[in-house]
Amino acid sequence: MKYLLTDQQTNRLLFRKLERSDFENWLKLFEDEQTARMLGMDNFKTPKERCEKWFEMTFHRYENNLGGQNVLISKERNQFVGQCGLLVREVENEFELEIAYSILPEFLGKGFAIEAARKCRDFAFESQFHNRLISIIIPENDNSKNVALKNGMTFKKKINYYDKVMDLFEIRKSNWEANLI
Image 1 (cartoon, rainbow, N blue to C red):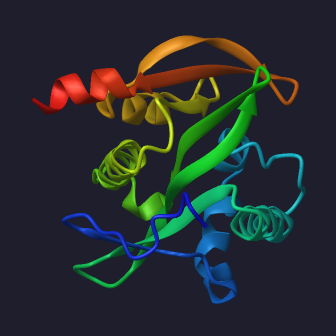
Image 2 (image 1 turned 30 degrees about the vertical axis):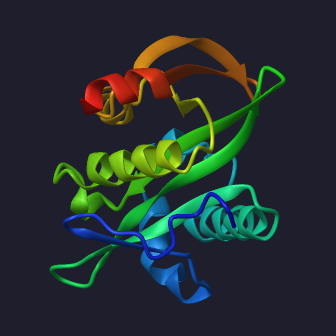
Image 3 (image 1 turned 90 degrees about the vertical axis):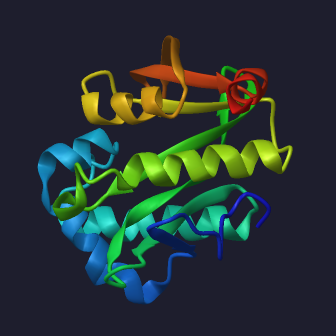
């Protein structure tokens, strides 16, 4: 479970692994068709099917050392805010490490995604996991693009990913180090 941020924290957030008991909290995310599409889960017909698949994929990642999104808990209210983490990906035959994030609708626009994404970025580079981090984003997902940009990433190129055209954002460790000074 090398890439998980379990027991990490930021000013406002605690990170922990997803648990089966989180299902009802996370089900709310998939009730919105637009959100399901942005997360690539629109092939599944019902919110319950989407959430079940999400949990299956997350636990598969955990069990196979492929990273995974951690649950984000608000320190102030002890509430489930969303998920964020590092995902091992293969993109164009190369090993990549993606920063991925999803925030529940009632917590959007409050800075939780960028706070969590920055923690993932810093954790990955400080842990020497990779010399580059990416985010793979559906082209019309402006909110996720804004988070990537605020995380120091730049648009690199369009890629075909699972038969979809996606935008690839990146940050290199050397750029991250230069901005720390």
